[in-house]
Image 1 (tube, helix red, strand yellow):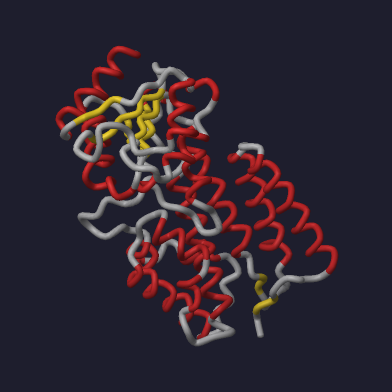
Image 2 (image 1 turned 45 degrees about the horizontal axis):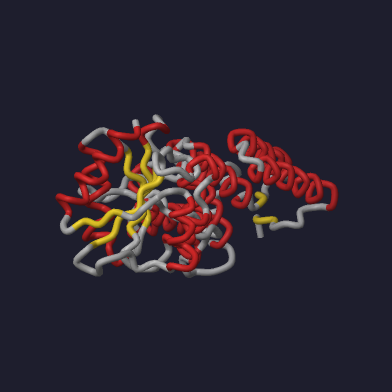
Length: 311
């Protein structure tokens, strides 16, 4: 058995845990670059401590590094770290199970659902890793396999697809970011068309559903991170849905009619369909009066006129 799983030995295990805890503390404080450096240091601690002829499982540190870089907006390095974590999973599980169980692990989840990679090339890459381990290869550093053709194919999204957006990489100009919230039943019919129209007039329309949700994270965490990094917010309030939570999370500095707009479909009803006693009262407390629209053209004109008048 070449693999040594945690715990490694008492001193090393405790030092590794302390380093991970310190990196998570930086992550919770929003210092994502420093968190990534901390997770990388924890990875390198294990890399350098591996006894000759054996390897430690180092996937946790690499996966966490990829997550921190994701929040920091470094897509390229985040993908590289996550691929290395996937290699660690494949190499370690090769010694435990003939099934490609690594495809069910967090690193694979992020590669598919956050970076938009395809499953079959990832499975082929995992098989390459497993073949190396089965032939007696030690693979002390997973990065050694990231230069292979199989890795390059696995890291390339399918042609013609629109990969999920990355949480830390919205448009670099915060004053042009517009959060778009509403019921996902209107995602295709209203929210994404509004996003596309905003792009055509040089704004960055932020729709939560366009972003990949990393393993172990909730969509609410994604929503909060995106909302707090937008200058404007438009809420479609024809029905009562997830936008109730989004409106609740609007930062204090945004709670003005210059920064928040509410719209509703007059074909659905003569007034908004959200809660009168809570959400609607909250909007009116901010002097935000919902505006009706009858079709997409009118929705675009309402939003564009609002942005023009508030810029």
